[in-house]
Amino acid sequence: MKIAMLARNAKLYSHQRLKDAAEERGHELEIINTLRCYMNIASRRPEIFYNGERLPVYDAVIPRIGASVTFYGLAVLRQFEMMGVFPLNESVAIGRSRDKLRSMQILARDGIGLPVTTFAHDPSQTEEVVKLAGGAPLVVKLLEGTQGIGVVLADTDRSAKSVIEAFRGANVNILVQEFIKEAGGSDIRASWSAARSWRR
Ligand SMILES: Nc1ncnc2c1ncn2[C@@H]1O[C@H](COP(=O)(O)OP(=O)(O)OP(=O)(O)O)[C@@H](O)[C@H]1O
Ligand SMILES: [Mg+2]
Image 1 (tube, rainbow, N blue to C red):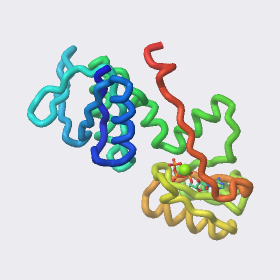
Image 2: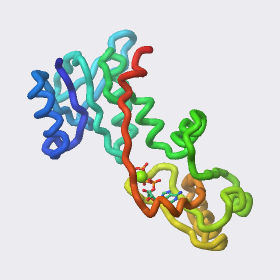
Image 3: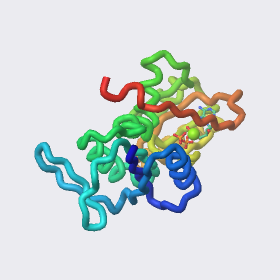
Image 4: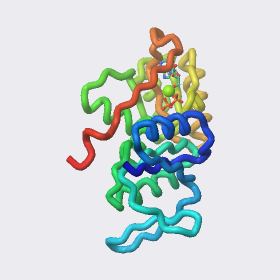
């Protein structure tokens, strides 16, 4: 297969390992700098340009889009999808995963057990939100953030309220969550390929 990998730094070890593994299996894999792609949205004729040339139609695309370039990265990935290129992870799935509230809503809908999670817009509901989440200790987190950035543990109701108010004052969206002590600060990474749901 002819595979494109969307990445920013081609030299990164994990990108290179995927390239080696693909080539060992007889595939061709090109690493394309996501941010250097540009495109024109023409009716029925989606194209992507790179270094002054039109990209060929690949069989598959492996998106490795960092959180800092989600918006542009997903626009490029969607263009590959419009061209009929099979994405290892669909743009819609990546978009859902980048929003903590949205991903929790999807997991909850399918019956996955989750910490009690609350979300509100109006600052006058801060007290209600703390109560609804079961009171301190509580975890307050930014809707968009990764690797622990913007995740705060509040030990008391009072500190929870001030953290919530501070975030709201900065005009950012947050969710408030029951603190799961048994988690012991661990971080479990799980992934599931979108392959099964593609073109159903
Ligand atoms: N409700 C919670 N109870 C206990 N610990 C938590 C809770 N939420 C988060 N943590 C701890 O904080 C860490 C970071 O939180 P979380 O995984 O939600 O954010 P992130 O790692 O920044 O984002 P993402 O996992 O989407 O990349 C978790 O790995 C976990 O150790
Ligand atoms: Mg995490």
